[in-house]
Length: 395
Image (cartoon, rainbow, N blue to C red; front, side, top):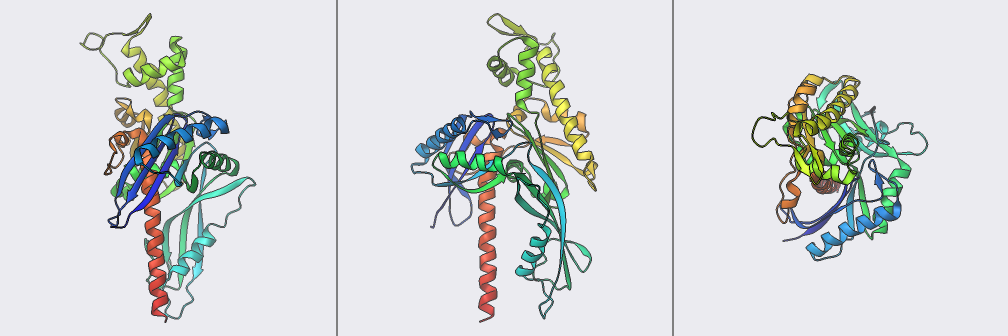
Protein backbone atom coordinates (compact mmCIF):
# COMPACT_ATOMS: atom_id res chain seq x y z
CA UNK A 1 0.00 0.00 0.00
CA UNK A 2 1.38 3.40 -1.00
CA UNK A 3 2.47 5.66 1.87
CA UNK A 4 2.92 9.43 1.99
CA UNK A 5 4.80 11.17 4.81
CA UNK A 6 3.48 14.43 6.27
CA UNK A 7 4.48 16.56 9.27
CA UNK A 8 3.40 19.56 11.32
CA UNK A 9 5.20 22.00 13.62
CA UNK A 10 3.22 24.03 16.16
CA UNK A 11 5.49 26.93 17.13
CA UNK A 12 3.84 28.25 20.28
CA UNK A 13 4.83 30.71 22.97
CA UNK A 14 4.87 28.01 25.66
CA UNK A 15 5.84 24.91 23.68
CA UNK A 16 7.03 23.59 20.33
CA UNK A 17 5.28 20.45 19.08
CA UNK A 18 6.49 18.48 16.06
CA UNK A 19 4.33 15.65 14.71
CA UNK A 20 5.46 13.21 12.02
CA UNK A 21 3.04 10.82 10.33
CA UNK A 22 2.50 8.60 7.33
CA UNK A 23 -0.70 8.49 5.30
CA UNK A 24 -1.91 5.35 3.57
CA UNK A 25 -4.28 5.24 0.62
CA UNK A 26 -7.27 5.21 2.99
CA UNK A 27 -6.38 8.82 3.83
CA UNK A 28 -5.93 8.32 7.58
CA UNK A 29 -2.66 9.61 9.09
CA UNK A 30 -0.75 7.24 11.35
CA UNK A 31 1.35 9.09 13.96
CA UNK A 32 4.97 7.90 13.94
CA UNK A 33 6.76 10.48 16.05
CA UNK A 34 5.99 13.37 18.41
CA UNK A 35 8.45 15.86 19.87
CA UNK A 36 7.29 18.38 22.49
CA UNK A 37 9.66 20.84 24.19
CA UNK A 38 9.31 24.16 26.05
CA UNK A 39 9.76 27.07 23.66
CA UNK A 40 12.26 29.88 23.94
CA UNK A 41 12.60 32.98 21.81
CA UNK A 42 8.88 33.62 21.33
CA UNK A 43 6.65 36.31 22.85
CA UNK A 44 2.88 36.52 22.38
CA UNK A 45 3.06 34.10 19.47
CA UNK A 46 5.83 35.91 17.57
CA UNK A 47 9.57 35.31 17.24
CA UNK A 48 11.55 37.55 19.60
CA UNK A 49 14.91 35.75 19.43
CA UNK A 50 15.70 33.86 16.22
CA UNK A 51 18.57 31.80 17.66
CA UNK A 52 16.65 30.65 20.75
CA UNK A 53 13.49 29.88 18.77
CA UNK A 54 15.48 27.97 16.16
CA UNK A 55 17.17 25.86 18.84
CA UNK A 56 13.80 25.00 20.44
CA UNK A 57 12.34 24.00 17.07
CA UNK A 58 15.43 21.93 16.30
CA UNK A 59 15.08 20.06 19.61
CA UNK A 60 11.38 19.30 19.04
CA UNK A 61 12.14 18.11 15.50
CA UNK A 62 15.00 15.93 16.74
CA UNK A 63 12.77 14.22 19.32
CA UNK A 64 10.10 13.51 16.72
CA UNK A 65 12.73 12.17 14.29
CA UNK A 66 14.11 9.81 16.93
CA UNK A 67 10.65 8.37 17.54
CA UNK A 68 9.74 8.16 13.84
CA UNK A 69 13.08 6.73 12.72
CA UNK A 70 13.72 9.04 9.77
CA UNK A 71 14.82 12.61 9.04
CA UNK A 72 12.14 15.29 8.71
CA UNK A 73 12.49 17.20 5.44
CA UNK A 74 9.40 19.45 5.32
CA UNK A 75 6.40 20.42 7.43
CA UNK A 76 3.26 22.51 7.67
CA UNK A 77 3.84 25.30 10.24
CA UNK A 78 1.39 27.30 12.36
CA UNK A 79 1.44 31.06 12.92
CA UNK A 80 -0.34 33.43 15.29
CA UNK A 81 0.12 36.86 16.85
CA UNK A 82 -1.68 40.18 17.20
CA UNK A 83 -0.54 41.09 13.67
CA UNK A 84 -3.18 38.73 12.20
CA UNK A 85 -6.23 40.40 10.66
CA UNK A 86 -9.32 39.23 8.80
CA UNK A 87 -11.48 40.96 6.17
CA UNK A 88 -14.34 39.84 3.93
CA UNK A 89 -14.39 40.64 0.21
CA UNK A 90 -16.57 39.97 -2.84
CA UNK A 91 -15.96 39.00 -6.47
CA UNK A 92 -18.15 38.45 -9.55
CA UNK A 93 -17.56 36.99 -13.03
CA UNK A 94 -19.68 36.19 -16.08
CA UNK A 95 -19.87 32.60 -17.28
CA UNK A 96 -18.76 32.80 -20.90
CA UNK A 97 -18.64 29.22 -22.16
CA UNK A 98 -21.30 28.14 -24.66
CA UNK A 99 -23.07 25.82 -22.20
CA UNK A 100 -23.18 28.49 -19.48
CA UNK A 101 -21.85 25.91 -17.02
CA UNK A 102 -19.57 26.89 -14.14
CA UNK A 103 -16.17 25.26 -14.53
CA UNK A 104 -13.10 25.07 -12.32
CA UNK A 105 -11.52 27.96 -14.24
CA UNK A 106 -14.51 30.19 -13.47
CA UNK A 107 -14.05 29.42 -9.79
CA UNK A 108 -10.39 30.39 -10.01
CA UNK A 109 -11.27 33.64 -11.82
CA UNK A 110 -13.86 34.77 -9.28
CA UNK A 111 -11.61 33.90 -6.33
CA UNK A 112 -8.76 35.83 -7.97
CA UNK A 113 -11.02 38.90 -8.14
CA UNK A 114 -12.23 38.35 -4.58
CA UNK A 115 -8.65 38.31 -3.31
CA UNK A 116 -7.83 41.62 -4.99
CA UNK A 117 -7.69 43.84 -1.91
CA UNK A 118 -5.39 46.77 -1.23
CA UNK A 119 -2.78 45.43 1.15
CA UNK A 120 -0.93 47.90 3.38
CA UNK A 121 2.82 47.83 2.94
CA UNK A 122 4.44 45.02 4.90
CA UNK A 123 1.42 42.72 4.90
CA UNK A 124 0.67 39.54 2.97
CA UNK A 125 -2.25 37.19 2.43
CA UNK A 126 -2.17 33.95 4.44
CA UNK A 127 -5.52 32.47 3.43
CA UNK A 128 -8.39 33.14 1.07
CA UNK A 129 -11.36 31.20 2.39
CA UNK A 130 -14.48 30.97 0.20
CA UNK A 131 -17.48 31.73 2.42
CA UNK A 132 -20.33 31.43 -0.04
CA UNK A 133 -21.26 31.49 -3.71
CA UNK A 134 -24.26 32.81 -5.62
CA UNK A 135 -25.46 31.96 -9.13
CA UNK A 136 -27.53 34.60 -10.92
CA UNK A 137 -28.40 36.11 -7.54
CA UNK A 138 -29.33 32.80 -5.91
CA UNK A 139 -27.30 32.61 -2.70
CA UNK A 140 -26.45 29.64 -0.52
CA UNK A 141 -24.54 27.73 -3.21
CA UNK A 142 -21.77 25.58 -1.74
CA UNK A 143 -20.32 23.87 -4.84
CA UNK A 144 -21.07 25.85 -8.02
CA UNK A 145 -18.87 23.80 -10.39
CA UNK A 146 -21.06 21.92 -12.85
CA UNK A 147 -24.11 24.15 -12.33
CA UNK A 148 -25.55 26.43 -15.03
CA UNK A 149 -25.59 30.23 -14.67
CA UNK A 150 -24.78 33.50 -16.38
CA UNK A 151 -23.06 35.04 -13.35
CA UNK A 152 -21.01 33.69 -10.45
CA UNK A 153 -20.52 35.65 -7.21
CA UNK A 154 -18.12 34.71 -4.42
CA UNK A 155 -17.73 36.05 -0.89
CA UNK A 156 -14.39 35.32 0.73
CA UNK A 157 -12.69 35.74 4.09
CA UNK A 158 -9.15 37.01 3.55
CA UNK A 159 -6.69 36.50 6.41
CA UNK A 160 -3.51 38.58 6.33
CA UNK A 161 -0.33 38.73 8.39
CA UNK A 162 2.70 40.95 8.87
CA UNK A 163 5.27 39.85 6.30
CA UNK A 164 8.15 40.21 8.76
CA UNK A 165 6.44 37.89 11.27
CA UNK A 166 5.97 35.26 8.56
CA UNK A 167 9.57 35.67 7.40
CA UNK A 168 10.98 35.36 10.93
CA UNK A 169 8.98 32.20 11.59
CA UNK A 170 10.03 30.61 8.30
CA UNK A 171 13.65 31.58 8.98
CA UNK A 172 13.60 29.78 12.34
CA UNK A 173 12.09 26.59 10.91
CA UNK A 174 14.47 26.55 7.95
CA UNK A 175 17.33 27.19 10.33
CA UNK A 176 16.30 24.03 12.16
CA UNK A 177 16.79 22.12 8.91
CA UNK A 178 13.14 21.81 7.85
CA UNK A 179 11.56 23.14 4.66
CA UNK A 180 8.28 25.03 5.20
CA UNK A 181 5.53 23.63 2.96
CA UNK A 182 2.78 25.93 4.19
CA UNK A 183 2.18 28.58 6.87
CA UNK A 184 -1.28 28.19 8.43
CA UNK A 185 -3.18 30.38 10.87
CA UNK A 186 -3.20 28.34 14.08
CA UNK A 187 -6.89 28.63 15.05
CA UNK A 188 -7.89 27.49 11.55
CA UNK A 189 -5.75 24.42 12.10
CA UNK A 190 -7.12 23.86 15.61
CA UNK A 191 -10.65 24.00 14.21
CA UNK A 192 -9.87 21.02 11.96
CA UNK A 193 -8.95 19.01 15.06
CA UNK A 194 -11.77 19.92 17.46
CA UNK A 195 -14.85 21.22 15.61
CA UNK A 196 -17.48 18.93 14.12
CA UNK A 197 -18.85 19.59 10.63
CA UNK A 198 -22.23 20.28 12.24
CA UNK A 199 -20.71 22.97 14.48
CA UNK A 200 -19.01 24.61 11.50
CA UNK A 201 -22.30 24.61 9.61
CA UNK A 202 -24.57 25.80 12.43
CA UNK A 203 -22.17 28.40 13.82
CA UNK A 204 -19.22 28.10 16.19
CA UNK A 205 -16.56 30.26 17.77
CA UNK A 206 -13.29 28.50 18.54
CA UNK A 207 -11.05 29.84 21.32
CA UNK A 208 -7.51 28.47 21.35
CA UNK A 209 -6.10 29.80 24.62
CA UNK A 210 -2.37 29.23 24.47
CA UNK A 211 0.62 30.40 26.44
CA UNK A 212 0.99 33.76 24.69
CA UNK A 213 -2.21 34.53 22.79
CA UNK A 214 -5.84 33.57 22.50
CA UNK A 215 -6.59 32.74 18.88
CA UNK A 216 -10.22 33.01 17.76
CA UNK A 217 -11.95 31.89 14.58
CA UNK A 218 -15.68 32.05 13.80
CA UNK A 219 -17.45 29.54 11.56
CA UNK A 220 -20.83 29.93 9.86
CA UNK A 221 -22.41 27.93 7.06
CA UNK A 222 -19.46 25.56 6.97
CA UNK A 223 -16.59 28.02 6.53
CA UNK A 224 -14.46 30.44 8.54
CA UNK A 225 -15.93 33.94 8.32
CA UNK A 226 -13.77 35.87 10.80
CA UNK A 227 -10.54 35.46 12.77
CA UNK A 228 -8.70 37.53 15.35
CA UNK A 229 -6.05 37.25 18.05
CA UNK A 230 -6.23 38.60 21.61
CA UNK A 231 -2.92 39.05 23.50
CA UNK A 232 -4.39 37.66 26.74
CA UNK A 233 -3.59 34.05 27.55
CA UNK A 234 -2.28 31.53 30.03
CA UNK A 235 0.77 33.75 30.56
CA UNK A 236 -1.35 36.49 32.13
CA UNK A 237 -3.01 33.96 34.44
CA UNK A 238 0.37 32.78 35.70
CA UNK A 239 1.62 36.35 36.10
CA UNK A 240 -1.51 37.28 38.08
CA UNK A 241 -0.87 34.39 40.49
CA UNK A 242 2.79 35.41 40.81
CA UNK A 243 1.98 39.08 41.50
CA UNK A 244 -0.89 38.36 43.90
CA UNK A 245 1.11 35.90 45.99
CA UNK A 246 4.68 37.16 45.63
CA UNK A 247 5.99 33.80 44.40
CA UNK A 248 8.17 33.25 41.33
CA UNK A 249 6.63 32.96 37.88
CA UNK A 250 7.82 29.35 37.55
CA UNK A 251 6.24 28.34 40.87
CA UNK A 252 3.03 30.15 39.92
CA UNK A 253 2.95 28.17 36.66
CA UNK A 254 3.33 24.89 38.56
CA UNK A 255 0.53 25.82 40.97
CA UNK A 256 -1.75 26.88 38.11
CA UNK A 257 -1.25 23.57 36.30
CA UNK A 258 -1.57 21.36 39.38
CA UNK A 259 -4.22 23.18 41.44
CA UNK A 260 -5.75 25.79 39.14
CA UNK A 261 -9.52 25.97 38.76
CA UNK A 262 -12.29 28.45 38.07
CA UNK A 263 -14.70 26.58 40.33
CA UNK A 264 -15.60 28.05 43.73
CA UNK A 265 -14.67 25.87 46.69
CA UNK A 266 -16.41 25.40 50.02
CA UNK A 267 -13.59 25.37 52.55
CA UNK A 268 -15.67 23.29 54.96
CA UNK A 269 -15.80 20.38 52.51
CA UNK A 270 -13.16 17.61 52.44
CA UNK A 271 -10.41 18.05 49.86
CA UNK A 272 -10.45 21.86 49.93
CA UNK A 273 -7.52 22.45 52.24
CA UNK A 274 -5.03 25.21 51.64
CA UNK A 275 -2.37 24.60 48.99
CA UNK A 276 0.97 24.45 50.80
CA UNK A 277 4.36 24.35 49.04
CA UNK A 278 7.29 24.86 51.42
CA UNK A 279 6.64 28.08 53.33
CA UNK A 280 4.06 29.25 50.78
CA UNK A 281 0.33 28.64 51.16
CA UNK A 282 -2.82 29.82 49.39
CA UNK A 283 -6.43 28.77 49.74
CA UNK A 284 -8.07 27.05 46.78
CA UNK A 285 -10.76 29.74 46.81
CA UNK A 286 -8.20 32.55 46.55
CA UNK A 287 -6.38 30.80 43.70
CA UNK A 288 -9.68 30.20 41.92
CA UNK A 289 -10.66 33.87 42.23
CA UNK A 290 -7.37 35.02 40.68
CA UNK A 291 -7.78 32.69 37.70
CA UNK A 292 -11.51 33.36 37.31
CA UNK A 293 -11.03 37.14 37.18
CA UNK A 294 -8.57 36.89 34.29
CA UNK A 295 -10.62 34.27 32.41
CA UNK A 296 -13.79 36.36 32.72
CA UNK A 297 -11.90 39.34 31.31
CA UNK A 298 -10.70 37.27 28.36
CA UNK A 299 -14.18 35.93 27.61
CA UNK A 300 -15.64 39.45 27.72
CA UNK A 301 -12.95 40.71 25.32
CA UNK A 302 -13.87 37.91 22.92
CA UNK A 303 -17.57 38.80 23.13
CA UNK A 304 -16.84 42.50 22.52
CA UNK A 305 -14.91 41.60 19.37
CA UNK A 306 -17.66 39.23 18.22
CA UNK A 307 -20.36 41.85 18.79
CA UNK A 308 -18.63 44.14 16.27
CA UNK A 309 -18.83 41.62 13.40
CA UNK A 310 -21.51 42.60 10.89
CA UNK A 311 -24.30 40.10 10.18
CA UNK A 312 -23.14 37.72 12.90
CA UNK A 313 -25.94 36.22 14.98
CA UNK A 314 -24.20 35.70 18.32
CA UNK A 315 -27.09 33.73 19.79
CA UNK A 316 -26.60 31.03 17.14
CA UNK A 317 -23.00 30.25 18.09
CA UNK A 318 -21.53 27.42 20.12
CA UNK A 319 -18.21 28.06 21.85
CA UNK A 320 -15.43 25.46 21.76
CA UNK A 321 -12.30 26.04 23.85
CA UNK A 322 -8.91 24.38 23.31
CA UNK A 323 -5.26 25.17 24.02
CA UNK A 324 -3.30 24.50 27.20
CA UNK A 325 -5.44 26.82 29.33
CA UNK A 326 -8.52 24.77 28.41
CA UNK A 327 -7.24 22.18 30.91
CA UNK A 328 -8.28 24.44 33.82
CA UNK A 329 -11.25 22.69 35.49
CA UNK A 330 -14.55 24.55 35.25
CA UNK A 331 -13.59 26.72 32.26
CA UNK A 332 -16.43 25.52 30.03
CA UNK A 333 -18.97 26.25 32.77
CA UNK A 334 -17.46 29.72 33.31
CA UNK A 335 -17.71 30.36 29.57
CA UNK A 336 -21.42 29.49 29.62
CA UNK A 337 -22.16 31.83 32.54
CA UNK A 338 -20.03 34.68 31.13
CA UNK A 339 -20.99 34.55 27.44
CA UNK A 340 -24.43 32.87 27.58
CA UNK A 341 -23.25 30.59 24.75
CA UNK A 342 -23.26 26.77 24.89
CA UNK A 343 -19.62 25.86 25.54
CA UNK A 344 -17.42 22.79 25.66
CA UNK A 345 -13.74 21.86 25.81
CA UNK A 346 -12.30 20.77 22.46
CA UNK A 347 -10.24 17.58 22.44
CA UNK A 348 -8.24 16.79 19.28
CA UNK A 349 -9.40 14.10 16.87
CA UNK A 350 -7.82 10.82 17.92
CA UNK A 351 -5.47 9.45 15.26
CA UNK A 352 -3.85 6.00 14.94
CA UNK A 353 -0.28 5.47 16.08
CA UNK A 354 1.66 6.91 19.00
CA UNK A 355 -0.89 9.64 19.59
CA UNK A 356 -1.80 9.27 23.29
CA UNK A 357 0.20 12.40 24.15
CA UNK A 358 -1.79 14.35 21.54
CA UNK A 359 -5.23 13.77 23.12
CA UNK A 360 -4.82 16.90 25.27
CA UNK A 361 -6.54 20.19 24.24
CA UNK A 362 -3.08 21.83 24.22
CA UNK A 363 -2.23 19.82 21.10
CA UNK A 364 -5.25 20.88 19.04
CA UNK A 365 -3.07 23.07 16.81
CA UNK A 366 -0.46 20.38 16.15
CA UNK A 367 -3.05 17.75 15.24
CA UNK A 368 -5.01 20.34 13.27
CA UNK A 369 -1.96 21.33 11.20
CA UNK A 370 -1.53 17.69 10.24
CA UNK A 371 -5.20 17.43 9.23
CA UNK A 372 -4.99 20.76 7.36
CA UNK A 373 -2.05 19.46 5.33
CA UNK A 374 -3.93 16.25 4.58
CA UNK A 375 -7.12 18.12 3.63
CA UNK A 376 -5.33 20.48 1.25
CA UNK A 377 -3.38 17.65 -0.39
CA UNK A 378 -6.72 15.94 -1.07
CA UNK A 379 -8.18 19.15 -2.54
CA UNK A 380 -5.20 19.51 -4.88
CA UNK A 381 -5.57 15.88 -5.92
CA UNK A 382 -9.30 16.29 -6.61
CA UNK A 383 -8.61 19.45 -8.61
CA UNK A 384 -5.93 17.69 -10.67
CA UNK A 385 -8.29 14.77 -11.32
CA UNK A 386 -11.05 17.17 -12.39
CA UNK A 387 -8.73 18.99 -14.82
CA UNK A 388 -7.55 15.63 -16.16
CA UNK A 389 -11.15 14.54 -16.81
CA UNK A 390 -11.97 17.85 -18.52
CA UNK A 391 -8.87 17.68 -20.71
CA UNK A 392 -9.54 14.04 -21.48
CA UNK A 393 -13.08 14.88 -22.55
CA UNK A 394 -11.77 17.51 -24.96
CA UNK A 395 -9.45 15.14 -26.79
